[in-house]
Image (tube, rainbow, N blue to C red):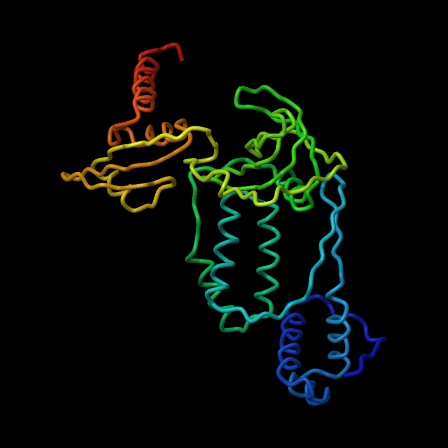
Length: 334
């Protein structure tokens, strides 16, 4: 098919996207079909099809440029695609969109929402009606999520993707602020909070975990770095119960009773090595972890329905916290 180079580019509307997707399907299935016959089949004129051909030819190399609120310039390559999307794949994409939104990832949420709309624009009317139902019946809800600045998240994601060194001003839980250079390796949402795992100049370039909501300022240094071969977050946190990676090995045994025992049965917990039924509604959970602090915090959540059996160090941490809580409730000064 020859193209009319004088034909203006079609407007970016849902109708045009759907027609272009239909056009690509016909070309893929019947590459030798005359353009007049294609136009008749699609109920459009030949000039419209020429515009679609021109747009498809240039889309593969087209680049989208934009600036964020602080004036930094970014660019993204995109290719127009006409993939066959199944119902299960659409549900998965919808779930991902809602999950990101519930976790406060505003910048990613905008991107996936835009992608979702583009895919919906080429879907059949039957599938579109189903999507509207799924949007009503699928949802996520958290008691709280980190107040991560979308600008920080976006900047960190771009720096990690392009392996660019960053300088950040970071606030610790006590309010102290420090400035350091970092080489980002991974951005992860763990239990509702967004963390960046990076080599840290103030830790002799050892890997450090940063809570993204505590990053106050950030900038690129202009330097790049090599991503360490074979490094993965899964390997780094292999024996970590949560976010922090320790350097020891602790065999933990905790007993649970009542309704809590049933909640423990329903999940496969990180670092779990065994789950033993002791009778009378009591279960015993065995873990092997490289640090105890996050296990301690988790045990405290279950109150009197959880009891640490071992190690003595963890049991002592819980007992000391119970005493401190009793003193806090007896103190009327605050």
